[in-house]
Length: 283
Image: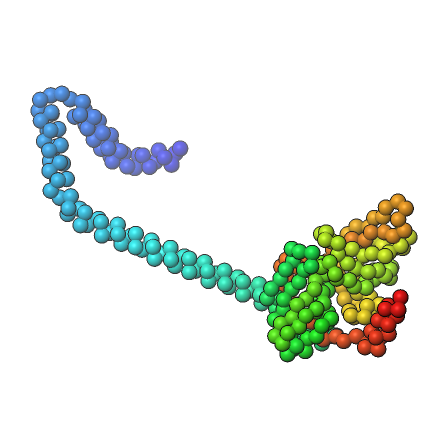
């Protein structure tokens, strides 16, 4: 309050002048004296004359200025769009560098011979779901080779050309893999029934499986090497009278966002594959 008073006191002459001008203008326009009316009339005529005769002059001054401002705004908008696109590309490049760095670290630490592959096509909304990778027989890829990411098991190769291959992913009707519970060493068969999670079947209900257990591939598989991480147990249940329990597993891999994978140049023991095939066919 004191500060306002000091400002008013310092500029009191200007405030007084403004007040007097306002009061004078008010009295002038309220006065009906003939001389005053004449002054108002002359003032209006003068303003009208100026508007009529000098409007082109003012337009010559202001319109080019307004047009230049509009053009400048258009240029600025275009530059803003270009900068936004560049920022988006830089952000995407940064995220890609992070992903590739993780992939490189994983590849260097892996005990397997890996071929890096990029996902160039996918079908993940059907009963049979696939990924298309940009590697093929020219890169040493063959049918039934496992496919993984730095997070875990992705699937297996089911078709190969010279430059591309098709991968059947975990969430596909025909996919099966032998897995094991890391903690309790309980084995089972991993498959998918169309739901959100994977299922481990053929597990007796008296065996020790708990929510939170880590699931890995087992040594019983003739396609996948053992100890590849698959996911985590998220639910265990069984129906009364049923000898088996239902084990639900959440995959570590997010198939909706996966962009890069590895193909394991892994070939199982051919003599074992032939022997097991003969036994299964006999049964």
